[in-house]
Amino acid sequence: MEVAFYNIEKCGESSDPEKKMKVDEFLAKFLWDFECDIVFLAEVHAARVDDFVNHIQAMKPKYHVESAYGFGSCNYVWARSKFVSVTSVDDVGPRPLIIFAKTGEPAVGVIHAKSGQNALTVKQLEYYALLLETNSAGMWALTGDLNYDEAKFERLTLPVGAHGGTVWEITQHKGGCLDWAILGAATRIKLNTFRTAKANMQGELLELEQPDHAPVFFDFD
Image (cartoon, rainbow, N blue to C red; front, side, top):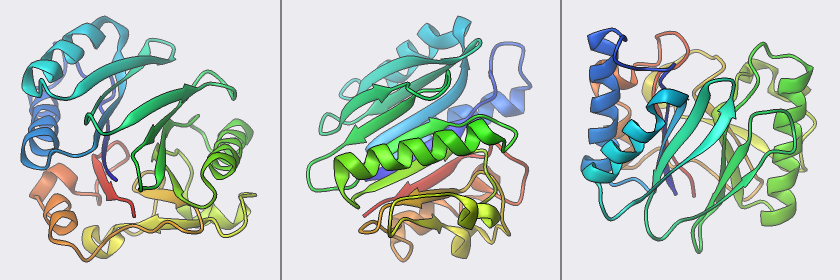
């Protein structure tokens, strides 16, 4: 399952033109060029949700485009292919987990976890990983903006066999809170594929030496 994720930090009309251009590039790249299974935006300002939904739907009419409340004035907006189903879970804190499923492929949970790497961050990651394991028995991935440093992965209490996965072989990123995922025992990230390499080597768009909130792309198998 191919997932493209971008925390756009309330990008709106008053945002820097370069930032707005990067959001447009992200949508064009992963909706048009790649036709990813899931293209997901986090921190969409509540006042812009309808604008983004309508814009994305016009770009890709054959996709389902939906939104959900995240927290505060922040919302999620995503586009999914017709082969992908979706459910939402909001049992831990105000930031729901959005779960995507596609026949024969790992279930993917996308979250914008609580910032600060505090007790609630940990609780969200551990609870949702257990939920995915219960429902999908090793065939799952938890991704998005995890807001938790991968270097502290071993401190998390996770289902047996769960492991971390990155695309750092391609991005040369040295660690951090964004571009990694928690994987079930039977799930991996495809690295040595043309599409994964192409997705993560397009100049500044996916340059993960930059601070948090850069776009990320994963191909889960």
